[in-house]
Length: 471
Ligand code: ARG
Image (cartoon, rainbow, N blue to C red; front, top):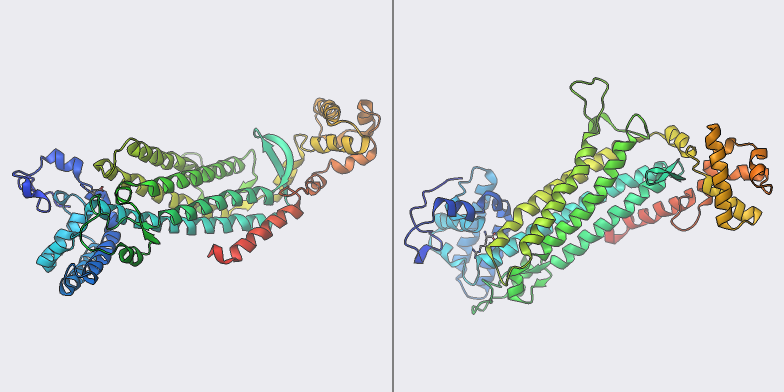
């Protein structure tokens, strides 16, 4: 980055200025420090624009050819690294155009015909966010596959299900994993949905009002892979819904990642030992030799902070902005860049962690039966077999739980005599429902934890993955 002295007026827009900007003005105004990340999209947009200008007879074919070749040279210079980006030239748009002028001379000055940086930046940024949606979709698909194979492996492995993080009822490992598949599946559909809605071209809206030149906005929209041009030029330059939708969807996804990360942190602790994380996704302690820490999970758990922070920041920037463009909107990019980078990293880390993860079947099963997890099964048995109203059955079971708790035993260890002392209608048949395998096998309602239901959920997702809409 070169920091030219600000004594001369800006070469791109300084016609009416006698003096250059104050150094502080330049520092607050410039976006090149971060928007250079849009260089490929900027050049792609300019190429589409120049080709359209020539096709419409607004510039000559010779000039358009020179512009195209020159832009390709600028692109390769930037991609080679070490490009001398200039703060005095403010942003990526003027840095590219200025270098183009050095390379091809006068025709470079014709590129900006019928265009403004307002529609230019809106176009570049849309293209960038659209690419990020695609990358996020790929990342989510890999994660869904990893969760699905965990579910397939342990479709009928029993484990405790929790509410309030207290033992509730036995569930299966497969069922728990499929819950996350559902969540990430919704994230995937939100990203697809956002991508579809953002896929309209702002290019040709010019500064705000459109242009008198006979441009073809449909042609540039098509060349850039947009479905159509945006219908209102004021909206086209002032809309950042696409960034807000991306950030909102990213934030919801980050919440899901954070919840799973939290479970992995708990489950990998010495007290739980439900799972063993691979060495590849764990770290050691510099002082405690025995430690194997779930740092990746903890960092994934924390990513929601910055991702939601980015969403909040852009919502606040956008609220109350009058139409059309205001420079406030330059503050959109860093938020989205940071959120996108961190979401991609979190998705990749979670996918790696989940693929490498060993669920400890024996520990899960041992824990599944503790904490009176089949108390509801007992109450349901009393309703079904002894004809008790559910409320009464609940009370009888509660008394039996208290009895077992006092003796320091689990429900199946109570004797039939003890049970009949609380309700004489209980028979030995009750013991069949107190086992955790019978408990989960009985929950066959649609979406329930019975292995038959879990396998149906898995089959449904395998169908989705095999379908055309997935690709
Ligand atoms: N760097 C600016 C941005 O990111 C580009 C648009 C500037 N437009 C303007 N009228 N000053 O928003």
